[in-house]
Amino acid sequence: MAHPGTSALSSPAGFEQAYDALREMRGSSGRTLLHISQLEEVSPGLAAKLSERVNFNVPRTARDALACFFSHATSRFIAGMLGLTVVARCFLGPPTAVDAIVAIATAIGWCFQEHLIHEKLLHSSEPWFGSDIHRWHHALPYYHVSLDGVGLAACWFAAVGAMAIALGHACAAPAPALTGLAVYTLFGGVYEAAHYIAHTRVPLPRGLNNVRAHHMKHHLVDNAYWFAFTLPAIDRILGTDGNARDASSKGS
Image (cartoon, rainbow, N blue to C red; front, side, top):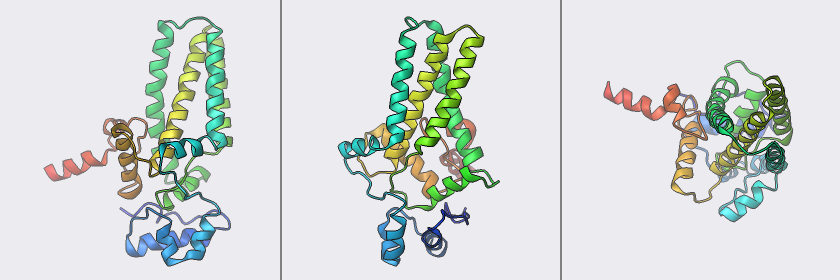
């Protein structure tokens, strides 16, 4: 399996040389790229150019990570929409058993959706702007500040919010619909935070460290496996757990 990023020939406008250098480093040496310092050793100028587009000054403490995370408009937008949705739901009365069912179904659905979007769309064999952006993410040294743009978050929330409102109106059940929207938004924030922290060097508790290790395998070992994020076990369910593949190969 080629190292992640070596098959991506497109690059962000104005940064072609820097991304070509990253691909060349992987293709010629097979080196695992973790830090921008590895590119600085080969070409300080290209490393400086790439740093104009990407923040490689990753936090090393939980306090710095929190400050950096909420310095981004995306994080603040998601937090704001979550708060707004929760307040709106509170005005419609206390939660019921239906709310609990909707919340659980939404949480499970998010975890499967996360995997399927990652595998089928972001790693699609048919190039499109989403897969291009994701390949650029893979081309970078692993440790960098990584969050989706606020425009994407806003459009996504607007689309899901419109569907939730329409469904709530059609079923005459606005309260459970808002519960679903709140849980969906919460999991969107959890994903952004977990993906962001996985690409930093902040010491993590065991559970989050397992998520980071899982994601690092996707980036550094084989990008055809380990697509799940919030719930790594989804990879075992959908047959994309590279560890299970390796165990099966050894057993045969």
